[in-house]
Each structure stands twice: as C-alpha cells, then as structure tokens.
Length: 121
Picture 1: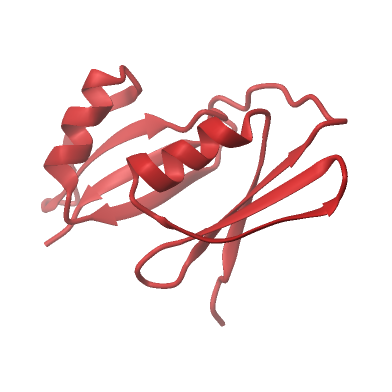
Picture 2: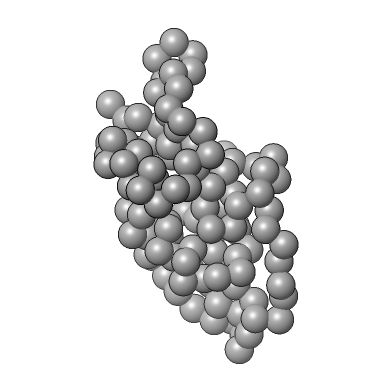
C-alpha cells in the first residue's frame, strides 16, 4: 500500500500555496476548480507524496492548531528552512534530536497543521 496524498482544507489558498511551494520547495503539480466556489491545488514532493489543498469560498474553517495531526518532511535544505522559519516566526518547537540521531524542528503551516522538518542526509 502507498499513501498517495494528504488533504488539507484551507482558509487562504494563496498563503498555503506559498508555504508548501515557495517555503518548503514542493512542486505545484496541478490546480483546478471542480466547481465555482472550490479551488484545489496539488503539491508533490521528491518521493511523489502529495499534499492536496482545498479552498471553498462557502466554508469558513476554524484554525486547526494542534489538531493532533502533523506532517513529517525530510529536507536536505534543513538549515535554510530553520533560518527561514525563525525569520518568519513560525517555529512551534526548536531543534531537537529524537531517537539518538534524528534532528528536527517543528512549524505550523498557515492552517495550523503541524509540520515536523527533519534534517536529511
């Protein structure tokens, strides 16, 4: 079994696209509107895992900070992302080493979804 994508419903599609595309460096794979009020954007990681962002003008979502779901992302640009996260004041957990060798830090995306950024090797 392969997990193909994770769906995140968003209040601000542009901020979310900026976070996953420009900030994390994922590639925009597809963007479309299945109906007039709904807009969907798919971002793909190097390993082909996808993040689906769904915005619906007719639905106002509450910020889901600490909704017990997080996304783990391994990055070779770890130090750059750490610096950018500090500059943007989005760190929710400073760098730690887990399991004896996994260095990581935590941020929240514009929707309150936790993102664990892991130092790639």
